[in-house]
Length: 428
Image 1 (cartoon, rainbow, N blue to C red):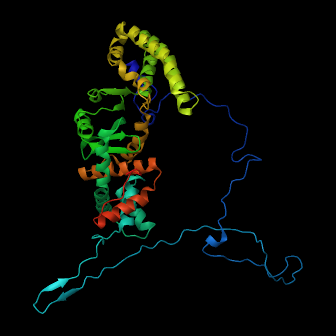
Image 2: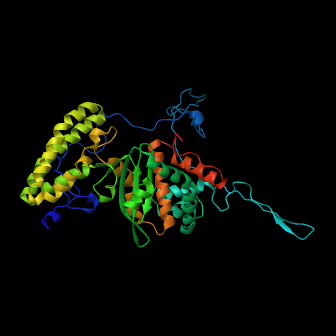
Image 3: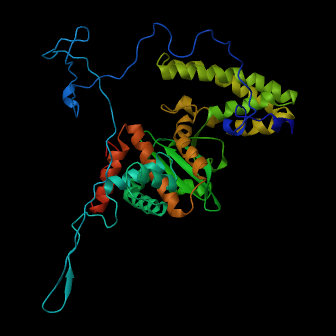
């Protein structure tokens, strides 16, 4: 019970936001400087745009001298420039399609058909894409998204209409999502993580799969191994970055996350049992050395060959400490699992491109976790499909440096025209 009371974000999987009594940082000495910019700091201001790019130019010419009142004539070749930025009044562009009904002499009435690509609903491609991003990328609720469209864009909208637009977005991006999902089984390295959510009143999980150039999200109602079989296949031959959850153990090559292991070692150090504390004290220094060396590899100040050479002593020391802990009853069960799957700790030393942590999946999943905390999950399977497809598109475009709104608009337009969607990956 004492050990559980000591749990916080540094020694367990608890997020810092759910544990308000985490260890406070040491107080910093109060600065004697005044708030705001300091004297002599470089000035920061908005750069003026060229005059020919301004929509309006208002010349301000004085008519008389400010001292003697004499009339002034002429203009200044280099006047002082003062630019004011303003938002234009936004008015939706409404296109009306008039379908005429003509009656033949035979008595049959024929109605004109809409042109190819004309939306059957009341929202065009840009409006549909914008509404989808409001809910998925900017995490607005259906009601808030409808309020934004009505208040700012002068576009009449309702929460029910937002659901309709979300389903159209989901249908438009489905081919791109399915294409990336089929590529997962071909990847040599994958970062995988999952987070709990809700679908209606049932439990669900958001899975994230981070490959080299794209990210795939999947919403499922469990976190069993059959989800991995569905998306990766039973014969996946790549390396998987993951935590120590047992559903990953069916795959051959794993890399367990050392950030999770460091938290576990910190939990040993904070435990009231003296033997656990001793093991935690012994494991923390080589773990910190591992992260110090890996940081130098990322910065380019240490070659991978030299990194692997220096890590041999760290690897030997940690394995020996785990064996030491295995021979002591308070830490036997903890060390048994790590020793039994010892190869999963050191895959990053033998396979080039493998990192010691699963931070890539943690970063990709962060947006989904924030969305889940704000929305409390989805209400139906169609909502889950919208979330997984839109998060896939948003994260993949972000990693590629692409404008997600431009791509999504083109995709929705192609969907309306019944044409192939533009490729999501630059190499496609």
